Amino acid sequence: MNRIIISVGDISLAAELNDSPTARQIWEKLPMTGPASIWGEEIYFEIPVTAEQEPDSRAQVEVGELGYWPVGQAFCIFFGPTPASIDERPCAYSPVNVLGHVVGDATEFVTVHEGTLVHLTRALE
Image 1: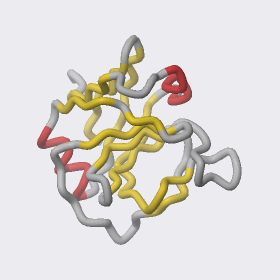
Image 2: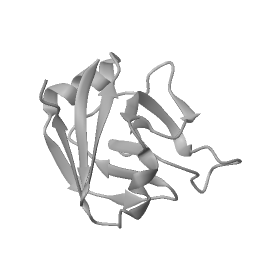
Image 3: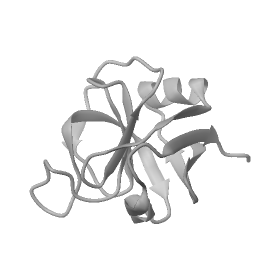
Image 4: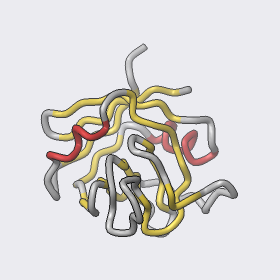
């Protein structure tokens, strides 16, 4: 698995990308930066990657999972319930390609404000 660092304001957490086609495409384009949009307890931002919905994409995700939202060409960080949730788990607006997961406590992102810059970089080995 490829490891990345997600930095937002004073929060910096490691994450692991899986070996999906979308995750590999994102890895190749790193580093990336964009302003955070907030939807419930999800951060998302548009990235310069175009990918189709993968066969195993899903809307129901877990706290700490990362996704790519094909509709909005967006990288998503899920850390709690969203407006589409039916319980305490995150639920994306529509299916996302699951990319991997945060290593550590993704709920730290709850303090992030709309418009704060999100930085995605490769982790130094």
